[in-house]
Length: 122
Image (tube, rainbow, N blue to C red; front, side, top):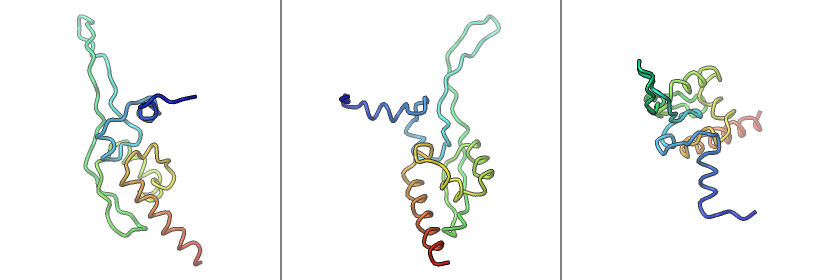
């Protein structure tokens, strides 16, 4: 099959069924995105509105890097990080499409490299 120019970008954009905005590439959104809803009034008139994810500035302490990592993150992602046992474990067990942040993917590679070097020495 031949790809139309821009088709790969559109496939990446809608890969999870949710259009990821550019804002999501600057933070950790954990797969959350903008959703559209119907706001229904008393007269049952429907008005389409968009719901933005709950984004907060957060600082996660990395045990491997021994420094805090500052990101804009959704509250959903903060719960996921707590459940995984820290930002290091969450980054390592999450695929890059869900992370969707170039800076976080670089940190994931750095953490994996540091953990790999410690594993070989022992």
